[in-house]
Length: 263
Image (tube, rainbow, N blue to C red; front, side):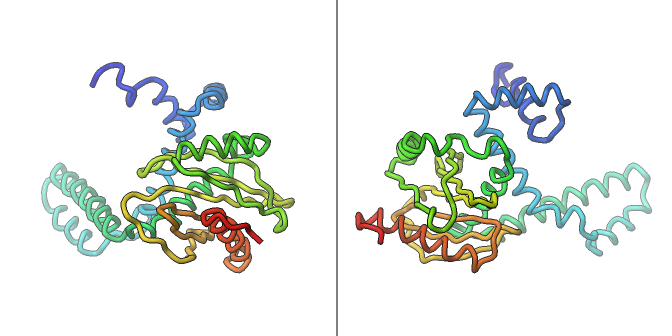
């Protein structure tokens, strides 16, 4: 690789250490200051954090689980060989477990739109945990936020009004995805409870889908597809508490799509 390859640049190395919490206090503060003024680096950090959460979600059970009996038997057979060969056999067994489980996970991952709530829940958990940088553009600049995200997603966006339900817009941000830019709006109530609305365009001729529910860890997600856009409302709430809010979001956004007045 070239020496100036961005994948091995000092900046990327620092950002990776920042994501993994491997910087000392001074360097972490310096990196945090850099991130506040670098939207591209912020997106890179968000993508790496989301990737870390996906890896933990898929592989932690394997990491902490019992070794399958057939692998233990293979290891015992290998122990009759030389110590070096024994170590090599164990190494190959570990590699085999990793490859086999990765293949299992790949086959078990559901196609779109089933991955929509999973991705939305990861983004929700990542950013609602932030105290000072939960949003990229604050609600005070809502007009700019909506115009910017509408342009990046190449379609007009609308922010639902949830004040009557106790939630006010905090702001939003743009996130990366395999299908292109994603918009995320965040809302908060008087108790500090936060909700996120995730909007992403879908590739190809994707049929609309009905209002559906998923649970990702402690995050509840209501999601649907409409005119090749995936919508997902996420919150750390029980299903019955999130449901009326999700219905109101769906109603307002559906009214906006059809050009009718929400009542």
